[in-house]
Image (cartoon, rainbow, N blue to C red):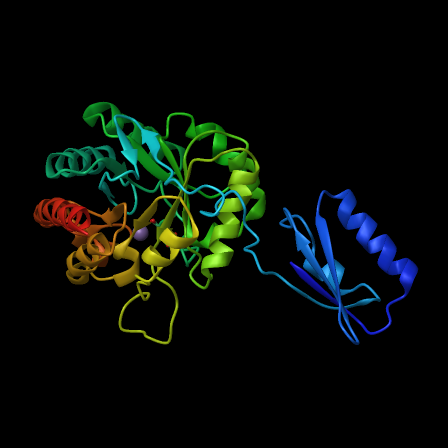
Length: 339
Ligand code: PEP
Ligand code: MN
């Protein structure tokens, strides 16, 4: 971090600023130019409040030269994070396929879809019990009962489960859930993120629909700062001027996040496209681009689904897609080995 001081700063204010910074374990390098003094700060500046420093009488401006996230930063943790889940793992060269309905609707539906996606090669079952719907009049999910049905499907198939939490008060119900999903609309629910940081279960954070990579990584940082290092990022499309698709899948997120962070990266082509016919090409593009896995909505009767039927694949289509993705992932690995 660099602090540029105003001309002729008050000497005692400057001395106390430097002493305060050194007291925080930060080294301060002082460069005196002809008219300006610049302070170069070395050390962990992530906890420094830029706005507070900028507001000081003697300070002209403050610039960060390092990212404000530390735990999620690849610079400090060069090796990829690999998260064990059930009999599988997220990251570390494994292709994770999370599949299942948008919402858990009833026992027959979730058991049928769970069995079908497992047979097709899915490594995790997804399904929403608490649903964040745009309209309060839309189906809101089965709640606690939905979680019970998901756990039943886990027992029947052995597939670990990933499902969304909407509020801190729901956490006690998530004891047997394998991955806790934080949805797009809650990516910046800092209270929720903090509480999820104080427990150990893996947390998958979906990208806020208008969030930058840095904002997204700061949300991961909230969880990690509490001590939970098991964080997964999920790109699910962002808001742009384009209205043809539900969202715009930002595939640049994959190589950019690979550079910035060591956390696993999952891609959700279903919520990005909003249209089942676009899911396969986007999913393939994500695997070719280096994603650690996919989150795909699958329903046994999309026409009658209580949410997101339009973007849901039938189990047979998911089966064909999964087969292709597994081959593509193998092929990408051979390419990597060659280079
Ligand atoms: C979901 O995964 O069902 C969901 C609601 O996704 P998002 O938070 O990305 O909209
Ligand atoms: Mn959905």
